[in-house]
Length: 297
Image (cartoon, rainbow, N blue to C red):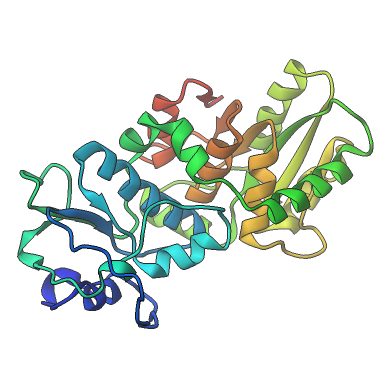
């Protein structure tokens, strides 16, 4: 639904127009004061990696402009399952407040004064803004302890009881993304040669390294890499939840990934050196220019 074409009376109605899924209206017992000036918010789109970028874009744009940030509950409900204490509120506490859609613009470039609000389109990615405060957004996305504990158990299995091993998280995105690459970028997917070259880079740099694979196609990973003694494929018997996969990637020292928002966030949260597939006009290319520890081969 296009929020800009559906005049609404309150933020409660407006919030639903931002979501691709239905949200239950519930009466809030805590009513905040209505915003005096503009707000910044976003429309929901995509899965966990996309929604992390959507949340982070609102968070960073609010810092940049001084506007009050709000995310729809359909985004927060997803993220609250993964992260401890997110600070950007939902519309729940201002659901009773009137909203003037005529004062909304769709980008920072179109924003002129503090009485204007910004509503970002779904799938928005604002790397230049977010990476300005990269350490702060890593803190904002603090993963729940139960997920981190489980990820540590998996890394312990991967280490084969050897201490001081360097963990490199490897995210391999295939399945639905292969068709998207052809349509959007006229590109072929990253092949095993890319991953082997990236792995070789870390093998030459560290004496004892283990590669922890997370993928939507674990059978492909098994066929291509399982013979290597320093490879551990986390989901070869059953698929993990996206939340656990993210916790595993974030718990590693360094990162290799091909493309996609999920792999980007796994690498950002891990914070170490990152090797990514060279894909022109992709958000990972922008991140590679902004983060000194990211590079292609």
